[in-house]
Image (cartoon, rainbow, N blue to C red; front, side, top):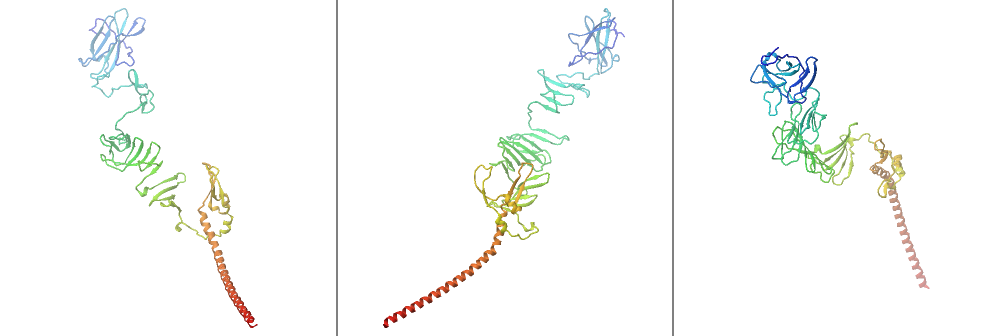
Length: 460
Protein backbone atom coordinates (compact mmCIF):
# COMPACT_ATOMS: atom_id res chain seq x y z
CA UNK A 1 0.00 0.00 0.00
CA UNK A 2 1.46 3.35 -1.02
CA UNK A 3 0.60 6.99 -0.37
CA UNK A 4 1.39 9.31 -3.23
CA UNK A 5 1.62 12.33 -0.93
CA UNK A 6 4.83 11.05 0.67
CA UNK A 7 8.18 10.82 -1.06
CA UNK A 8 8.88 7.47 0.59
CA UNK A 9 7.18 4.14 0.09
CA UNK A 10 5.41 2.96 3.27
CA UNK A 11 4.16 -0.43 4.35
CA UNK A 12 1.40 -0.66 7.01
CA UNK A 13 2.17 -3.18 9.77
CA UNK A 14 0.06 -3.76 12.93
CA UNK A 15 1.93 -2.66 16.05
CA UNK A 16 0.93 -2.02 19.68
CA UNK A 17 -0.48 1.36 20.67
CA UNK A 18 1.48 2.92 23.52
CA UNK A 19 0.03 5.36 26.01
CA UNK A 20 1.45 7.16 29.01
CA UNK A 21 -0.28 6.33 32.35
CA UNK A 22 -2.52 9.17 33.58
CA UNK A 23 -1.91 11.12 30.34
CA UNK A 24 -4.68 13.37 29.03
CA UNK A 25 -4.52 11.97 25.50
CA UNK A 26 -2.74 9.41 23.36
CA UNK A 27 0.89 10.30 22.57
CA UNK A 28 3.04 9.30 19.66
CA UNK A 29 5.73 6.74 20.37
CA UNK A 30 8.23 5.61 17.84
CA UNK A 31 10.28 2.44 17.67
CA UNK A 32 13.76 1.95 16.30
CA UNK A 33 14.52 -1.57 15.23
CA UNK A 34 16.63 -3.41 12.75
CA UNK A 35 14.17 -4.50 10.11
CA UNK A 36 16.35 -7.43 9.20
CA UNK A 37 16.73 -8.89 12.70
CA UNK A 38 13.50 -7.44 14.09
CA UNK A 39 15.32 -6.49 17.31
CA UNK A 40 13.20 -3.68 18.79
CA UNK A 41 13.78 -1.04 21.42
CA UNK A 42 11.13 1.52 22.42
CA UNK A 43 11.84 5.15 23.09
CA UNK A 44 9.21 7.90 23.52
CA UNK A 45 9.63 11.16 21.70
CA UNK A 46 11.15 13.82 23.92
CA UNK A 47 8.36 16.10 22.92
CA UNK A 48 5.06 14.19 22.83
CA UNK A 49 2.99 14.73 19.72
CA UNK A 50 -0.77 14.58 20.03
CA UNK A 51 -3.00 13.63 17.14
CA UNK A 52 -6.24 15.46 16.46
CA UNK A 53 -9.06 14.89 14.11
CA UNK A 54 -9.32 17.58 11.54
CA UNK A 55 -12.72 19.18 11.73
CA UNK A 56 -12.16 20.63 8.33
CA UNK A 57 -12.17 17.28 6.55
CA UNK A 58 -15.29 15.38 7.57
CA UNK A 59 -15.29 11.76 6.57
CA UNK A 60 -11.48 11.59 6.54
CA UNK A 61 -8.96 10.68 9.17
CA UNK A 62 -5.48 12.05 9.74
CA UNK A 63 -2.23 10.15 9.42
CA UNK A 64 0.73 11.45 11.35
CA UNK A 65 4.16 9.88 10.94
CA UNK A 66 7.79 10.74 11.46
CA UNK A 67 10.87 10.48 9.32
CA UNK A 68 14.39 10.81 10.75
CA UNK A 69 14.43 14.46 9.90
CA UNK A 70 10.87 15.76 10.14
CA UNK A 71 7.20 15.19 11.07
CA UNK A 72 4.60 15.07 8.31
CA UNK A 73 0.80 14.97 8.51
CA UNK A 74 -1.39 13.83 5.60
CA UNK A 75 -5.06 13.05 5.13
CA UNK A 76 -6.15 9.68 3.82
CA UNK A 77 -9.55 8.23 2.91
CA UNK A 78 -11.63 7.12 5.89
CA UNK A 79 -12.05 3.64 4.50
CA UNK A 80 -8.44 2.84 5.37
CA UNK A 81 -9.18 2.87 9.12
CA UNK A 82 -11.93 1.99 11.57
CA UNK A 83 -13.97 4.79 13.01
CA UNK A 84 -13.91 5.28 16.81
CA UNK A 85 -10.73 3.19 17.11
CA UNK A 86 -7.05 3.88 17.44
CA UNK A 87 -5.27 2.04 14.61
CA UNK A 88 -1.47 1.84 14.72
CA UNK A 89 0.73 1.19 11.70
CA UNK A 90 4.44 0.84 10.97
CA UNK A 91 6.13 2.79 8.19
CA UNK A 92 9.13 1.17 6.49
CA UNK A 93 11.41 3.71 4.81
CA UNK A 94 14.34 3.36 2.48
CA UNK A 95 16.76 4.42 5.24
CA UNK A 96 18.85 1.24 5.98
CA UNK A 97 16.08 -0.74 7.61
CA UNK A 98 15.06 1.91 10.23
CA UNK A 99 11.30 1.84 10.79
CA UNK A 100 9.31 4.74 12.23
CA UNK A 101 6.05 4.06 14.07
CA UNK A 102 3.08 6.20 13.21
CA UNK A 103 -0.36 6.26 14.78
CA UNK A 104 -3.60 6.66 12.93
CA UNK A 105 -6.15 8.37 15.14
CA UNK A 106 -9.63 7.76 13.80
CA UNK A 107 -12.69 9.00 15.66
CA UNK A 108 -16.20 9.90 14.70
CA UNK A 109 -16.75 13.51 13.84
CA UNK A 110 -17.78 15.63 16.93
CA UNK A 111 -17.15 12.70 19.39
CA UNK A 112 -15.51 13.58 22.71
CA UNK A 113 -12.06 12.01 23.22
CA UNK A 114 -10.75 14.02 26.18
CA UNK A 115 -12.03 16.17 29.03
CA UNK A 116 -11.20 19.85 28.83
CA UNK A 117 -10.57 21.92 31.96
CA UNK A 118 -12.54 24.76 30.36
CA UNK A 119 -15.67 22.65 29.88
CA UNK A 120 -17.09 20.05 27.50
CA UNK A 121 -20.06 20.57 25.21
CA UNK A 122 -20.30 17.39 23.16
CA UNK A 123 -20.44 14.65 25.81
CA UNK A 124 -22.14 11.36 24.94
CA UNK A 125 -23.51 8.57 27.12
CA UNK A 126 -20.30 6.63 26.55
CA UNK A 127 -18.06 9.32 28.08
CA UNK A 128 -17.01 9.18 31.70
CA UNK A 129 -14.22 10.09 34.09
CA UNK A 130 -12.84 7.19 36.07
CA UNK A 131 -11.23 3.79 35.83
CA UNK A 132 -12.23 0.59 34.03
CA UNK A 133 -10.50 -1.74 36.48
CA UNK A 134 -10.55 -2.09 40.29
CA UNK A 135 -8.13 0.77 40.80
CA UNK A 136 -9.61 3.55 42.91
CA UNK A 137 -10.44 6.89 41.28
CA UNK A 138 -8.66 9.75 43.08
CA UNK A 139 -8.89 13.52 42.96
CA UNK A 140 -5.86 15.55 44.03
CA UNK A 141 -5.06 19.15 44.92
CA UNK A 142 -1.55 20.36 45.71
CA UNK A 143 -0.49 16.82 44.72
CA UNK A 144 -2.34 15.35 47.71
CA UNK A 145 -5.30 12.97 47.40
CA UNK A 146 -8.43 14.79 48.61
CA UNK A 147 -11.17 12.40 47.49
CA UNK A 148 -11.22 8.70 46.66
CA UNK A 149 -13.86 6.49 45.05
CA UNK A 150 -12.94 2.83 45.43
CA UNK A 151 -14.06 -0.14 43.35
CA UNK A 152 -17.02 -0.73 45.72
CA UNK A 153 -18.39 2.74 45.08
CA UNK A 154 -17.49 4.00 48.56
CA UNK A 155 -16.51 7.66 48.63
CA UNK A 156 -13.78 8.85 50.94
CA UNK A 157 -13.07 12.50 51.72
CA UNK A 158 -9.90 12.96 53.72
CA UNK A 159 -9.31 9.20 53.65
CA UNK A 160 -8.05 6.92 50.87
CA UNK A 161 -9.68 3.81 52.35
CA UNK A 162 -13.42 4.57 52.61
CA UNK A 163 -15.36 1.81 54.34
CA UNK A 164 -18.83 3.32 53.88
CA UNK A 165 -20.84 4.89 51.06
CA UNK A 166 -19.59 8.24 52.36
CA UNK A 167 -16.59 8.19 54.69
CA UNK A 168 -15.43 11.63 55.82
CA UNK A 169 -12.32 12.16 57.94
CA UNK A 170 -12.98 15.59 59.41
CA UNK A 171 -15.87 17.93 60.00
CA UNK A 172 -18.86 18.52 57.74
CA UNK A 173 -20.36 22.01 57.56
CA UNK A 174 -23.93 22.24 56.28
CA UNK A 175 -26.74 24.78 56.40
CA UNK A 176 -30.37 23.64 56.62
CA UNK A 177 -29.61 20.21 55.18
CA UNK A 178 -32.29 17.68 54.28
CA UNK A 179 -31.82 13.94 53.95
CA UNK A 180 -34.58 12.14 52.08
CA UNK A 181 -35.66 8.54 52.39
CA UNK A 182 -34.80 5.98 49.74
CA UNK A 183 -38.25 6.40 48.20
CA UNK A 184 -37.73 10.17 47.92
CA UNK A 185 -40.04 11.13 50.79
CA UNK A 186 -38.78 13.75 53.31
CA UNK A 187 -36.50 12.35 55.94
CA UNK A 188 -34.17 13.98 58.46
CA UNK A 189 -33.63 17.77 58.56
CA UNK A 190 -30.56 19.40 60.10
CA UNK A 191 -30.23 23.15 60.55
CA UNK A 192 -31.48 26.09 62.58
CA UNK A 193 -34.22 28.73 62.50
CA UNK A 194 -33.55 32.34 63.36
CA UNK A 195 -31.43 32.78 66.48
CA UNK A 196 -32.01 29.25 67.71
CA UNK A 197 -29.23 26.76 68.21
CA UNK A 198 -28.96 23.86 65.80
CA UNK A 199 -31.78 21.34 65.45
CA UNK A 200 -32.30 17.92 63.94
CA UNK A 201 -35.74 16.50 63.27
CA UNK A 202 -38.32 14.91 61.02
CA UNK A 203 -41.08 16.57 59.01
CA UNK A 204 -39.83 20.16 59.29
CA UNK A 205 -38.16 22.98 57.38
CA UNK A 206 -36.13 25.89 58.70
CA UNK A 207 -36.57 29.66 58.37
CA UNK A 208 -33.92 32.37 58.35
CA UNK A 209 -35.67 35.19 60.21
CA UNK A 210 -37.72 33.58 62.96
CA UNK A 211 -37.34 30.78 65.45
CA UNK A 212 -40.35 29.00 63.97
CA UNK A 213 -40.41 25.76 62.04
CA UNK A 214 -42.80 24.65 59.32
CA UNK A 215 -44.08 21.26 58.21
CA UNK A 216 -42.61 19.81 55.01
CA UNK A 217 -44.88 16.75 55.03
CA UNK A 218 -48.43 15.81 56.01
CA UNK A 219 -47.39 13.89 59.06
CA UNK A 220 -46.36 14.19 62.69
CA UNK A 221 -43.13 16.02 63.44
CA UNK A 222 -40.43 15.54 66.05
CA UNK A 223 -37.30 17.56 66.68
CA UNK A 224 -34.18 17.50 68.83
CA UNK A 225 -33.23 21.12 69.58
CA UNK A 226 -29.94 22.13 71.18
CA UNK A 227 -29.57 24.92 73.74
CA UNK A 228 -26.70 26.59 75.55
CA UNK A 229 -27.05 24.16 78.45
CA UNK A 230 -28.37 20.93 76.93
CA UNK A 231 -30.99 19.73 74.48
CA UNK A 232 -34.74 19.10 74.25
CA UNK A 233 -36.82 16.46 72.49
CA UNK A 234 -39.91 18.10 70.99
CA UNK A 235 -43.07 16.58 69.50
CA UNK A 236 -45.91 18.01 67.43
CA UNK A 237 -49.26 16.73 66.12
CA UNK A 238 -49.92 15.98 62.47
CA UNK A 239 -49.85 19.06 60.24
CA UNK A 240 -49.90 20.24 56.64
CA UNK A 241 -46.87 21.32 54.56
CA UNK A 242 -46.04 25.02 55.03
CA UNK A 243 -47.96 25.51 58.26
CA UNK A 244 -46.19 26.58 61.46
CA UNK A 245 -45.32 23.77 63.86
CA UNK A 246 -46.35 24.12 67.52
CA UNK A 247 -43.90 21.91 69.34
CA UNK A 248 -44.34 20.65 72.91
CA UNK A 249 -41.30 19.63 74.96
CA UNK A 250 -41.23 15.88 75.54
CA UNK A 251 -37.95 15.65 77.45
CA UNK A 252 -35.06 17.97 78.34
CA UNK A 253 -31.58 17.06 79.54
CA UNK A 254 -29.46 19.89 80.91
CA UNK A 255 -25.74 20.25 81.56
CA UNK A 256 -25.78 18.86 85.13
CA UNK A 257 -27.64 15.76 84.05
CA UNK A 258 -30.99 17.03 85.28
CA UNK A 259 -33.90 15.63 83.28
CA UNK A 260 -37.26 17.21 82.66
CA UNK A 261 -40.11 15.21 81.11
CA UNK A 262 -42.85 17.43 79.76
CA UNK A 263 -40.90 20.52 80.78
CA UNK A 264 -37.77 22.38 79.74
CA UNK A 265 -36.96 23.36 83.34
CA UNK A 266 -36.24 20.45 85.72
CA UNK A 267 -35.59 23.00 88.46
CA UNK A 268 -33.63 21.61 91.39
CA UNK A 269 -34.66 18.02 90.68
CA UNK A 270 -32.59 15.29 89.11
CA UNK A 271 -35.82 14.15 87.43
CA UNK A 272 -38.96 16.23 87.10
CA UNK A 273 -42.15 15.11 85.33
CA UNK A 274 -44.73 17.70 84.29
CA UNK A 275 -48.09 17.05 82.66
CA UNK A 276 -51.41 18.67 81.84
CA UNK A 277 -53.41 15.56 80.93
CA UNK A 278 -54.70 13.31 83.75
CA UNK A 279 -54.45 10.36 81.37
CA UNK A 280 -50.67 10.86 81.26
CA UNK A 281 -50.15 11.79 84.91
CA UNK A 282 -47.75 9.12 86.05
CA UNK A 283 -44.74 6.94 85.45
CA UNK A 284 -44.19 3.20 85.64
CA UNK A 285 -41.71 0.36 85.91
CA UNK A 286 -42.30 -2.78 83.88
CA UNK A 287 -40.46 -6.09 83.78
CA UNK A 288 -40.69 -7.28 80.20
CA UNK A 289 -40.08 -10.95 81.06
CA UNK A 290 -43.14 -11.27 83.29
CA UNK A 291 -45.11 -8.28 81.93
CA UNK A 292 -45.72 -7.11 85.50
CA UNK A 293 -45.46 -3.44 86.33
CA UNK A 294 -45.62 -0.86 89.11
CA UNK A 295 -46.75 2.69 88.44
CA UNK A 296 -47.41 5.98 90.22
CA UNK A 297 -50.21 8.36 89.24
CA UNK A 298 -51.45 11.71 90.48
CA UNK A 299 -55.19 12.20 91.03
CA UNK A 300 -56.69 15.22 92.79
CA UNK A 301 -53.16 15.97 94.00
CA UNK A 302 -52.95 12.59 95.75
CA UNK A 303 -50.32 10.07 94.73
CA UNK A 304 -51.65 6.63 93.80
CA UNK A 305 -49.67 3.40 93.62
CA UNK A 306 -50.68 0.74 91.09
CA UNK A 307 -49.58 -2.82 90.35
CA UNK A 308 -50.48 -4.29 86.95
CA UNK A 309 -53.06 -1.54 86.55
CA UNK A 310 -54.76 -2.19 89.89
CA UNK A 311 -54.71 0.35 92.72
CA UNK A 312 -52.67 -0.79 95.70
CA UNK A 313 -52.32 2.31 97.90
CA UNK A 314 -52.48 6.08 98.06
CA UNK A 315 -50.53 8.89 99.69
CA UNK A 316 -52.54 11.76 101.11
CA UNK A 317 -51.56 15.15 99.66
CA UNK A 318 -52.00 16.93 103.00
CA UNK A 319 -50.55 14.51 105.55
CA UNK A 320 -48.51 12.12 103.41
CA UNK A 321 -50.27 9.19 105.10
CA UNK A 322 -49.82 5.89 103.28
CA UNK A 323 -53.16 4.09 102.89
CA UNK A 324 -53.25 0.58 101.36
CA UNK A 325 -56.41 -0.65 99.67
CA UNK A 326 -59.12 -2.25 101.87
CA UNK A 327 -62.17 -2.41 99.62
CA UNK A 328 -64.57 -5.27 100.43
CA UNK A 329 -65.19 -5.63 96.69
CA UNK A 330 -61.57 -6.63 96.23
CA UNK A 331 -61.57 -9.29 98.96
CA UNK A 332 -62.78 -12.86 99.27
CA UNK A 333 -62.95 -15.61 101.90
CA UNK A 334 -63.47 -13.10 104.69
CA UNK A 335 -63.25 -14.82 108.13
CA UNK A 336 -63.10 -13.60 111.75
CA UNK A 337 -59.60 -13.44 113.16
CA UNK A 338 -58.56 -16.09 115.64
CA UNK A 339 -57.55 -15.28 119.23
CA UNK A 340 -54.42 -13.17 119.43
CA UNK A 341 -53.75 -12.61 123.11
CA UNK A 342 -51.67 -15.73 123.59
CA UNK A 343 -49.61 -14.90 120.50
CA UNK A 344 -49.23 -11.29 121.52
CA UNK A 345 -47.79 -12.44 124.81
CA UNK A 346 -45.05 -14.26 122.84
CA UNK A 347 -43.83 -11.15 121.05
CA UNK A 348 -40.50 -9.74 122.19
CA UNK A 349 -40.30 -5.99 121.73
CA UNK A 350 -36.62 -5.03 121.55
CA UNK A 351 -34.24 -2.11 121.16
CA UNK A 352 -31.36 -2.39 118.71
CA UNK A 353 -28.87 -0.68 116.39
CA UNK A 354 -28.18 -1.43 112.71
CA UNK A 355 -24.73 -2.81 111.91
CA UNK A 356 -24.17 -0.80 108.71
CA UNK A 357 -25.64 2.45 110.04
CA UNK A 358 -23.44 5.53 110.03
CA UNK A 359 -24.71 6.46 113.48
CA UNK A 360 -25.29 4.56 116.73
CA UNK A 361 -28.94 5.54 116.91
CA UNK A 362 -31.10 3.13 118.92
CA UNK A 363 -34.35 1.82 117.46
CA UNK A 364 -37.37 0.03 118.92
CA UNK A 365 -39.13 -2.81 117.19
CA UNK A 366 -39.19 -6.55 116.60
CA UNK A 367 -36.82 -9.12 115.14
CA UNK A 368 -38.29 -10.50 111.91
CA UNK A 369 -37.07 -14.06 112.55
CA UNK A 370 -38.81 -14.03 115.96
CA UNK A 371 -42.05 -12.70 114.52
CA UNK A 372 -41.88 -15.30 111.73
CA UNK A 373 -42.55 -18.04 114.29
CA UNK A 374 -45.66 -16.27 115.61
CA UNK A 375 -47.09 -14.24 112.73
CA UNK A 376 -45.52 -15.60 109.52
CA UNK A 377 -47.89 -13.55 107.34
CA UNK A 378 -46.15 -10.37 108.53
CA UNK A 379 -42.65 -11.49 107.44
CA UNK A 380 -41.23 -11.63 103.91
CA UNK A 381 -37.96 -13.30 103.03
CA UNK A 382 -36.37 -11.65 99.96
CA UNK A 383 -33.68 -13.83 98.41
CA UNK A 384 -32.47 -13.53 94.79
CA UNK A 385 -29.27 -14.01 92.82
CA UNK A 386 -29.25 -10.41 91.63
CA UNK A 387 -27.96 -7.89 94.16
CA UNK A 388 -27.88 -10.69 96.79
CA UNK A 389 -30.53 -9.28 99.15
CA UNK A 390 -31.28 -12.41 101.30
CA UNK A 391 -33.08 -10.19 103.82
CA UNK A 392 -36.18 -10.51 106.00
CA UNK A 393 -38.66 -7.64 106.00
CA UNK A 394 -41.48 -7.01 108.51
CA UNK A 395 -44.91 -5.47 107.93
CA UNK A 396 -45.27 -3.28 111.00
CA UNK A 397 -48.65 -2.00 109.83
CA UNK A 398 -50.08 -5.48 110.49
CA UNK A 399 -49.46 -5.14 114.21
CA UNK A 400 -52.16 -2.49 114.40
CA UNK A 401 -54.83 -5.02 113.48
CA UNK A 402 -53.34 -7.60 115.83
CA UNK A 403 -53.30 -5.07 118.65
CA UNK A 404 -56.94 -4.19 118.01
CA UNK A 405 -57.84 -7.87 118.06
CA UNK A 406 -56.02 -8.28 121.33
CA UNK A 407 -57.82 -5.31 122.79
CA UNK A 408 -61.12 -6.75 121.67
CA UNK A 409 -60.27 -10.01 123.42
CA UNK A 410 -59.46 -8.10 126.60
CA UNK A 411 -62.67 -6.13 126.47
CA UNK A 412 -64.93 -8.86 128.02
CA UNK A 413 -62.40 -9.29 130.76
CA UNK A 414 -62.36 -5.59 131.30
CA UNK A 415 -66.16 -5.44 131.32
CA UNK A 416 -66.33 -8.36 133.76
CA UNK A 417 -63.76 -6.76 135.98
CA UNK A 418 -65.66 -3.51 135.76
CA UNK A 419 -68.84 -5.28 136.85
CA UNK A 420 -67.02 -6.92 139.70
CA UNK A 421 -65.59 -3.61 140.66
CA UNK A 422 -69.03 -2.02 140.61
CA UNK A 423 -70.44 -4.83 142.78
CA UNK A 424 -67.57 -4.59 145.15
CA UNK A 425 -68.01 -0.87 145.24
CA UNK A 426 -71.67 -1.31 146.12
CA UNK A 427 -70.80 -3.82 148.82
CA UNK A 428 -68.21 -1.52 150.22
CA UNK A 429 -70.70 1.32 150.21
CA UNK A 430 -73.22 -0.86 152.02
CA UNK A 431 -70.64 -1.79 154.60
CA UNK A 432 -69.78 1.83 154.95
CA UNK A 433 -73.43 2.65 155.47
CA UNK A 434 -73.83 -0.13 158.08
CA UNK A 435 -70.70 0.99 159.80
CA UNK A 436 -72.00 4.52 159.88
CA UNK A 437 -75.28 3.26 161.39
CA UNK A 438 -73.45 1.24 164.02
CA UNK A 439 -71.24 4.13 164.84
CA UNK A 440 -74.29 6.36 165.18
CA UNK A 441 -76.01 3.79 167.44
CA UNK A 442 -72.94 3.40 169.57
CA UNK A 443 -72.69 7.13 169.89
CA UNK A 444 -76.32 7.27 171.00
CA UNK A 445 -75.81 4.48 173.52
CA UNK A 446 -72.75 6.23 174.85
CA UNK A 447 -74.68 9.42 175.17
CA UNK A 448 -77.47 7.67 177.13
CA UNK A 449 -74.92 6.03 179.35
CA UNK A 450 -73.33 9.34 180.16
CA UNK A 451 -76.73 10.83 180.90
CA UNK A 452 -77.62 7.99 183.37
CA UNK A 453 -74.36 8.41 185.25
CA UNK A 454 -74.95 12.11 185.66
CA UNK A 455 -78.47 11.59 187.20
CA UNK A 456 -77.13 9.01 189.66
CA UNK A 457 -74.50 11.34 190.92
CA UNK A 458 -76.99 14.11 191.46
CA UNK A 459 -79.19 11.85 193.61
CA UNK A 460 -76.39 11.11 195.94
